Length: 303
Ligand SMILES: Cc1cc2nc3c(=O)[nH]c(=O)nc-3n(C[C@H](O)[C@H](O)[C@H](O)COP(=O)(O)OP(=O)(O)OC[C@H]3O[C@@H](n4cnc5c(N)ncnc54)[C@H](O)[C@@H]3O)c2cc1C
Image 1 (cartoon, rainbow, N blue to C red):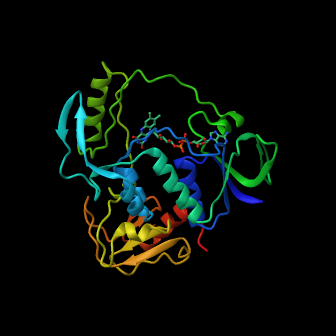
Image 2: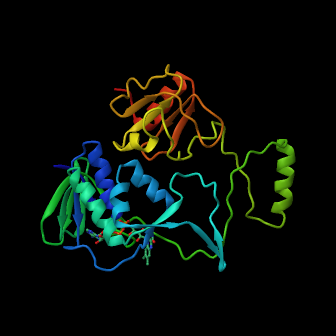
Image 3: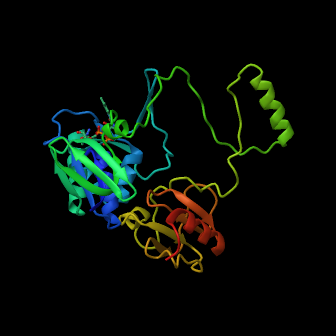
């Protein structure tokens, strides 16, 4: 029985298949098309996508087939230069047709050992406690422990599961911001009440404490040896530890440990940061007990 069948071999399905292979999961991609589509949707990749590609060692392949363009802000017909201090090592856009992106990600997934079955349209599924039987349009089926629907905006898997997609086009615009509020709670409550008298949707909620780096994505930065994104190609967690006295023991099969001086380009310096495989900080601090709790929360029980 296959561990995971991924329905849909677009960019989401192929990237997921590759990520699963990095962790040794047996994966089959069932893609309904025999051949990739000839038409183009995406014309380019933005900063965050480029960072993710770099984190997995894919960027040179994409750079070889794309064109770098400077970032520009274009709002209401006003063309403006992009800010110079963007928090990224990749402040540019990569022009690359989606069929090329699809091909490169398919090669990446296959190179890591993902099996791809083309001409395999998912039309039905049955699931019980042991797993899922995935029924295909040609009358055959695949058995797996997990099925993941990456079959696009009109997802068949979503429909088969009866998962709703209710809604209508948005007609209201919201502004959302995060800030450190220093005024007294009663003063803040009074201001909120005053604004809500005329703006009923206005609200303010606590985000909780914790280090400001937590849940932020870290840009690429130089380490004592090499650079951060180079250390993320394996798709494992990463403990950046300037103290040398912290340990991910118990999670060493899932989390790498990099000891040495490093600097954060944002926020105050911290002794250590635990990074999730997607490059976001799960924890920042210097306390081993807190670190162990966070490792358990994000990476499962200790071995
Ligand atoms: C006009 C346009 C322009 C865009 N421009 C950009 C851009 O410049 N930059 C950018 O980043 N994004 C852009 N996008 C968005 C981008 O195209 C999508 O985010 C991306 O394709 C989503 O990838 P996906 O893998 O989730 O879905 P899809 O690309 O839709 O892939 C889904 C796959 O599932 C397969 N499938 C469907 N049903 C089944 C089934 N039952 N069984 C098996 N396989 C199935 C399909 O054949 C397909 O291969 C654009 C989109 C459009 C429409």
